[in-house]
Length: 170
Length: 125
Image (cartoon, rainbow over all chains, first blue to last red; front, side):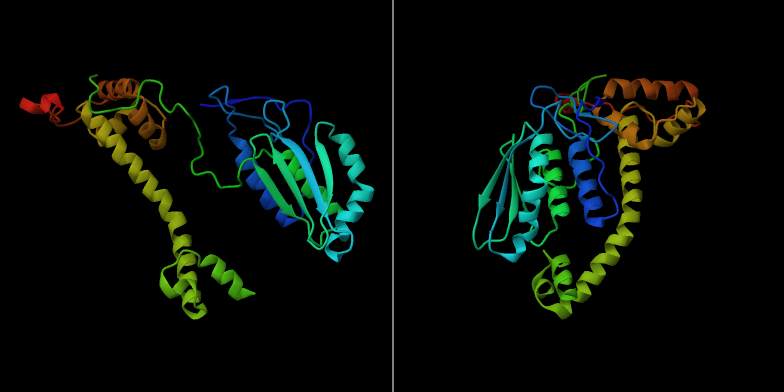
């Protein structure tokens, strides 16, 4: 069985649930975050709120904002960089945010996580608010792949008394 | 754009059903119907799987599924079949305790054949 652990001091931001895309991703994130394994212990810990970091440690190390200064698909990202990027940096001092000029290509956000996983999200033709949402999602998630969980319970030790075999004498 | 969605759903299908729109459309429709039906069937299948497992677990101790469940009901033990099947797989001693509880509450109408005894070389297995 798994124990619940309280979410550390950084409270997760409440998303606007009116957009369907956000809700879907929200659900995935929730499932992926829901049962979290740390290498040290065998118990998974979740909180009654959503868990955004693993045991009080933010998982996103670096965020790369790649944009083009000529293309029209980057307009939103450029506006985001002028207006909201600095506030995003201030609210997340642990995060290393880099802007990268990539001329002639569509813009994307690349997140590099502690489990050496990188998550690339295309922000082509998105409004600055949407880009902010994407960046926040990347910051909140663990680096896990977004897959549907096969079983509801995830455990390294399914048995306390020892799984039944034909050799057991009771 | 509907074609694009159809082909997206037709990934992994056999032969022309994943490449040719006319065939893919039919198979995708059928696949969606099957998945609708099977979401309901899955619940039934899982329950029967649990019951099979509980049956196997109890027969080791000489009790059959029906008598076992009746005994549990009499003792007001409200564990469901899912949990019971997990116990029978992974916690054999706890499960034996449950079987004993049920057996004292309801020994059964007929004399159940006792747990199969191993003779000869089968003892080694």
